Each structure stands twice: as C-alpha cells, then as structure tokens.
Length: 364
Length: 102
Image (cartoon, rainbow over all chains, first blue to last red; front, side, top):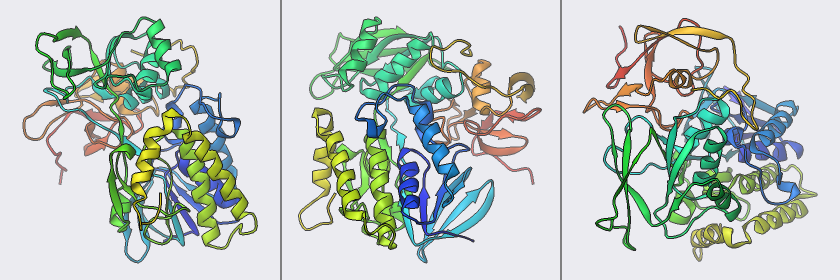
C-alpha cells in the first residue's frame, strides 16, 4: 500500500497546479495520472491561451504542459505515478489503483479530484460509424500523433473546441467544408471564429446533422436547418460528402469516484452535468475530498489551473501547511478566478455556480 | 495519412516497425498508439458491436470510451487508442465482448 498526505487524481492542468501548490506549502503529494505523460489534454492544444500572464496567456497548451509537467516531476515532495488509473474509493478512505498493470492501494489524508471530463456524443442515425469522432479525439490524433483523421471533415459545434479544431484541421491540410451549429449563435470567441471564416469555412448556425450515410465508414451526411424547438425545417435538407464527421458538442465532468465517495452532487446543465457541491475552499461534502478543474464543472484550462492552485492551497492548509500566508494567497487566487470569469464568456459558468450555491447549502 | 510538415508541431516518432493486423503486415512507429498506426494505414474499423455486429472505430482517443477495444497478442479489450505499438504485435478486430483463451 502506498501512503501519502495529499492524493491528487489527474495530471492535467488542474491536477498539476494542485500538486505544485500543495507541495510548495510543504505537503507530501502523490499525483496519479492515467496516461504515460503529464499535462492531460493540454498536450494537444496548439492554440494560444488568453487571460493574464499569471495564467500563461499567449502560450500554447502543449508548452504549458511541458513547463508544469517538468516542475511537478522535479519537485522533491511530489511523487508521480504515471500509467496509473484510480479504480475506486473505499469507505475506509483508501483508493485502489492500477499502476503499470499492477493492482495497488493508496491511503491519504486529503484528496484532490482533478479527473477532468469526457466528450459528449450526439444521437442521430449511424452516429457510431467509423469516421465519426470526438473533436478532442481528432485533436489528439492530429496534434499529438501526427495523423490526419481524413481528407474532408465536417464539424458539428461552433463552440471554442469545434472552431479551434476546425482551424487546426485546416493547418494540417484537411478540408473543412462546413461547421454545423444547432444554436442560433456561434459560441466560440470571435477571434477564433473569424479566423476560420476568413479561410473560407462556412458556419451554419441553427442547423443540425440529421443522419450519416455509409456502410463501413461515414461517406456522407445530411444536415438541415432547425426551428426554435430544434425541429428540422422541411425542404432545408442538404447533403455533404465527407470522410470524417467531428463532434464538438460539449463535455461531461468525470465524477465516478466522487459519486462513489458519497459526495453530494447536483445536476447543473451550465456546468456540464452532475457536479459536487463544494465549500469556499473547494472541499466537497465529504471532508478531505477537494475538487478542481473540469470535474467540478466544464470550463477552460486557464480556470482549471487557478482552481487547482486554490484546491492545493486549501488541502495543504487543512493538514496544517502554509497557514501563515494562507488567507492572502487564497484571496489572490480567488481574485484571479473572478477576473477570468468576469466577461460575457464567463456568464454561463457564473450562472451555473450560482445555481450550485443554493441557499443553506455549501457554496460554489 | 501522416502529417510531415506542420506549421507549429514537430512529431518525434519512434523507430519504424511492423506489426500484424488481421493477418496483414502493417508499418507503424514504436510507441505510438496502435489505433494511430492503424488509422495512418487507412484502417477505420477496429471492432464490431456486440448485438448488431456494426463496425466501430475509435471515438475519444484518450482511453475513456472502449470503442477502440481490440484483441492484441491474444488479449481482448485492449484500448488501442492508448496502448503503445510494439514490434511484431498481433492485432485483431474484435467482435462482441471479447473472449479469453483459457
């Protein structure tokens, strides 16, 4: 059995920052990462980040992964377990792990859940044909492994991920004949959306995919305009020949272990699904279990990093580390988070967090 | 279809090796995910669904969803989107839930 003071599950932006901030305060940290590398989904992100310098603005995701991953790997108080999957939470406070294909267990005094999220699917006839991939999957295949998904890719979803991945497809020499978006407006930041439009990619808002065609793989799709009730308008159906259909319709928090640990959860659509209730210090309803990043509500990597820092600070403080500077550090990190969520792009997450903070409950 | 010239990225690949896919010899790079090597070689169908035998490719590419499960060196349900490719691997399309040779 392994033993640690603070167990961090997930080595993406939230988990890396959580590990660093807890270890810098003096706590012994074990970071568990399912993949063979640190950085989570940052490793495939080639776009530049927004925000301020403190949040790595103007840096590309994969460079941030290298930087933070390096700091974590070099830290004397952080033990990194790679190729290590958290399997389950036991009521005596032990987490079971598969580490390099061996079964292990680990005990801890506090735990930070930074498990991230998974991509949503979309239901339509033939939606599981080969060639229909998650946008994140396409990003991984292309930007990490250097393999293009196909020659001609239709994108579903004009949020940031859909639009950014469309741009990356164009960069890799792939045609993108259409971006199809069910909402009446483009969700992505204008800087991203206007870039793909300038490159000749039409964005069809108030449209959806009706069906995919093909026997062994996708060969064609039918898409159509939809009304306010999301019903297709007869006569607007169009066909498009593609060899890949890429789905970018949002993410869902990965919360299995939180459910298993008995954390109080609530379904908040703005946050992407079921998320744990949490205190001002990012502690869930189960004492000693903290939350950070997309696992607590779908947002961006910049916010995940700040949340990670806060959860790390608070978990360390709970064990008695870093108490002197704690109130100041916490207030500064909170201001950083508020600043990130301040603009119109943060409206969604702000309303989700307000719902999570129902009167008399622990707050979000 | 591999990317050889990218405006931002450089792909550091392992050594070129060969492996078996359903009896056919295919080339890939050591250490890349099996599914990436197969995709680069034009293979899209990795498994067939349990009830209706429908073709399945990968979906998430990060080891979450099980859509890419294949039989590798006789072991069923290997997540090929994250399993590193090794020389001489025997990779087979899987149908249904996968059986162990006992």
